[in-house]
Image 1 (spheres, rainbow, N blue to C red):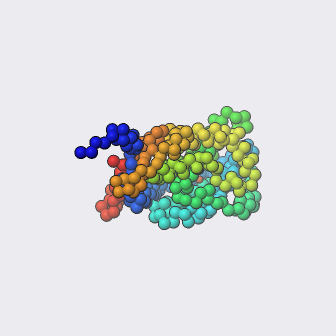
Image 2 (image 1 turned 135 degrees about the vertical axis):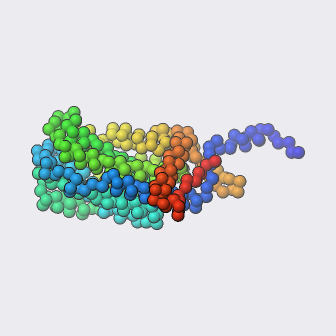
Image 3 (image 1 turned 45 degrees about the vertical axis):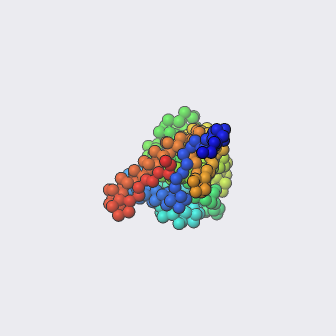
Length: 355
Ligand SMILES: [Fe+2]
Ligand SMILES: [Fe+2]
């Protein structure tokens, strides 16, 4: 029997990763992410048709929209209209990147249809405010569409995180305009802006943005679970360089950004507290610092055949939370597939990546 030096044994023991190591091959992980997206998309469409099937022309009593809103509210409506105006670019640019994924590309088309109705909703709000006419709006649309929106990142994993933060930010914007529309703003400039029609519009559109946020969040969790290193690196990049869509191409966007900031709708404070902090929590990350530490600690370790396997980062990132969330995603998909019968012909079961 060979007498091993106990120090060597100890060194090997110390070097062993204390973190769960991924079990699945790259192909299997890609397959599971794809199946996850597809199942989620099918579930999403059913829910969307059942619960959020509204129409931008007929679901609101536009004739009763106030004609005497403050100039600030009208400028905010105009700004929201502008941001939603680039929906053809939002759809086509990313669609090219994700076109091979059945689940993601089909979801993206559905998502685009829901964003398109947002553009129409704000179009109507601006028009029925009585302070801009159709001629002006058409001219403004022409100015906006003279520029084309470009993808901030051109890979699927960065874009899933971008859409997580962007959808949450949009939801926060609309919810906070809703505060003004309910007459609950503490700011003097909005003292006379209560409007039940605008309130209903904000609630309706914010519910769509919440649904979008949730879909992208679940997609991000799939990546966090199966590709944690790549996922947290992408997430960190997105947080560092995040900007609202089309801010760089909308004419006079700075003035709009300043206004929504002053209006307590969306500024650095709302972004940090209501967007980044919330999304990080929903992704099992304790905070921005934890994310940076996670990146430093994540690494690849060889398995018994010498293949590099990904390790699940642990400090500051609640991996158990992510695993449970991903199990819930597949549980939800199973529920939908059992209801439709898909489960009997082509089921989408959860496959764990960690022992
Ligand atoms: Fe939207
Ligand atoms: Fe959205």
